[in-house]
Structure formats: structure tokens, C-alpha cells
Length: 420
Ligand SMILES: Cc1cc2nc3c(=O)[nH]c(=O)nc-3n(C[C@H](O)[C@H](O)[C@H](O)COP(=O)(O)OP(=O)(O)OC[C@H]3O[C@@H](n4cnc5c(N)ncnc54)[C@H](O)[C@@H]3O)c2cc1C
Image (tube, rainbow, N blue to C red; front, side, top):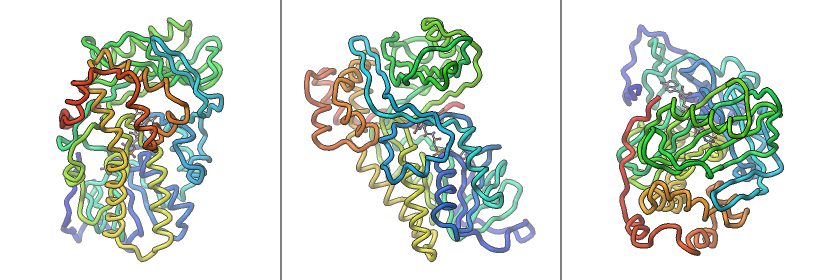
């Protein structure tokens, strides 16, 4: 992890820009890239620059979301990307339940994210293959010593696991197959949990499901996913299970792409302490690093879109806004998000602590018997109070004494560095 030195002493001999930028965005992942796009569209006078260590925006993965995760007024920000979209609903399969739900689904590969940003953002707003060595309220010092100054700095570097937070892990590996003949799927399969409930590292159990996206008549993306206690993955084991799933469905072909991840599933903790570990005075924090994720699904896209638009509209309205004010604005939003997602952290505790790993599938199976609109609001992080009660009522899928213990548990610390 790079240093984040607050009161950076400037070396006068190092190169530096003459006119300060209005905004420097550090990290051109999903959050940083969307903030850049929103500033470009909604705050056209804002002189910003994105500093991204990698060769492209967004790294190498695929982000998916339900259309209803985004409020209607937020959708135009994602509309210009070359997306995969499915408007005939999606399927889920469990040992005792199979169902098609009506919600539209979207998926964006990071290569398309990069292509759109490069096409739309002026070249002077983009610095790829440029690593920030240190970040402070007055700007960024690059790895080569160059100093970039700014009125406001937004830190969108990756999420950092913290022992102040607790929970479990979502471990997954996905491969895109180009099949020799059409695979025949027309809808995404968001969860096929009819598979064996194995752990992602060869022994033990976890909540396991396979996620399948028909990307074209012949391309199919198959991802093996686990809600596991440990951030461990044996990639060869997962590749074998993906191959077995493809074989079982009669899909033969070459692998043309692959992604893998180990993401936190947050069940509790001290959010203020976790933020303090990554916060730099006067620097705004956004993205997964700033706490903007769904505790149970680890998805960040809807919150990244919402934040990007909120930041851009604020800067357009208040050209005099200081970096400290922007940092406080993001922190208030992060704390509000933390409070608003308490219910999902409680469900994470139920999943990881009240249910044995091989019984976690029952918790999800129970959930998917509920009404489609409730499921939509759940994924969007907008469950109503009646939804919350409904999810917890009925025949409980976990033992009540364990459920009560889980409610009051502080959970396992999430302090392990995620393996690459
Ligand atoms: C494989 C995978 C699949 C996922 N799928 C989904 C999904 O389907 N839907 C969803 O909502 N979420 C998904 N997520 C979760 C989450 O949305 C992503 O992790 C998302 O990319 C987080 O965005 P971010 O911008 O906060 O961080 P990141 O995407 O991690 O971006 C951080 C950026 O900062 C850059 N950086 C780091 N250090 C420096 C430095 N010193 N100087 C300059 N730049 C630096 C990195 O190169 C990177 O580009 C997925 C995550 C993974 C790993």
C-alpha cells in the first residue's frame, strides 16, 4: 500500500504543475472513473485530472447490477457504455426452488469502461500508468517525484481490509467461454446453488453458487462463487469446478477471459475507526475504500454512480467548495450509508455465524421465495421496514439460539490482506 503522508514537504527541485487543478482523482477504478465522467458532463468548467497507476481505467473485471439498483435519474451516467443487458428477467436455482424473476440485469466489462472513458474524457484529464506515491490535501506527489497540486483531492484507491471491521468473504473466479455451438441460454442465472456446497480451497464447506451470464449466443461467462469464512482461494480448484459446470451443461469451447476476486462481506465493526485508518486530513474518500459498498453482496456500482453524480453536482453548484468541505461531504455520505446498511450487516452475521457453512444455502433459498419487488429493493440496498420484517419471518432457516447469539456477536475481524 502506498504512503499517505499528510503534510508533504515539497522538494523545490522536483517538477510540479503551475496552475493547481480544481480536482485530482487518485485511482481510476470504477469509483474514480465515474467521478471523472460525472465531472466532465455536469461540471464542465472543472479542471480535473485522474491519476491511475494501471494501464487502463477499471482494472480487469466485469461489473454487473440490476437495472433497479440505479434510480431512474442516475441511469444516464451508465447509458453510454457498451453494456450487456437482459430485459427478460433472470433465473435462480436452489435444491428445492427454481424461479425466474422479472428484473432487468446489466453487465459492463472493464475494457468497455476504459474505452468509453478514453473516448469521452479530454486527453489532458487522464494520466494512466501514473502512480501516486503520496496524497495530501494540497495535491499528489507522483512516484517519479512530480508534484501535482489541487484545490481538492479525492482518494479512490482500492479498499483496504481493516481489523476494525468484521465479517466473512466472497471468493470467486469466473471464466468466459466461447462455445463451439450456441449455448442456448437467454437469461442470466444469478444464483445456481444446486451445486455441491464445497469450500473454495479444497476442503470444508461454504455457501457456493454458480453465476452464469449469456454474453452472446456463443459466449457464456461462468463464475464459481463462495461465501466463505477465510479469504482463501485455490484458483486451480475453482477453474476445475467451472470446467465441470460447463461440461455438465454441454458447453464446449475456448476460454477467452477470466476474472477472480476476494471481497469482504461486512457484518459489523467500528466504521469510524476503519475510516480513520485510510483517511487523510482534507482529502475526500470515495469508492470501496471510502465505505461505499453493499455489506452482503460487496457490490459498489450503485453507490459509485450515486456518489459520482452527487460530487459533480456539488462542485458545479459550489465552485468555491474547499477540499476540506468536499472531504466532510463524502464522510457524511459514508456514515449515512453505513447507518442505512445496518440491516444487511445483521443479515451477514446471520449468514456467517448462525448458519453452518453447508446450511448457508438454506438462508438464500428462503430469501428467494419472497416477492420480486422485495428482492429488487434488497439488492439496491433500499429495503423497506415491512421488507426487513418479511425477510426475518416465516420458518427460520437457522437455529434460534444461534441466531440470537449472532445478533449480538462482534464477528471475526476483516484484517487479512486480500491475496492478489
Ligand atoms: C473481480 C471483481 C468483480 C466484481 N464484480 C462486481 C459487480 O459485478 N458489481 C459490483 O457492483 N461490484 C463488483 N465488484 C466489487 C466492486 O464494485 C469493485 O471492486 C470495484 O471495482 C471497486 O471500485 P473502486 O473504484 O472503489 O476500487 P478499484 O476498482 O479497486 O479501483 C482502485 C484504483 O486505484 C488504482 N490505484 C491504486 N493505487 C494507486 C496509486 N498509488 N496511484 C494511482 N492509482 C492507484 C488502482 O489501479 C485501481 O484502478 C467486483 C470486484 C472484483 C474484484
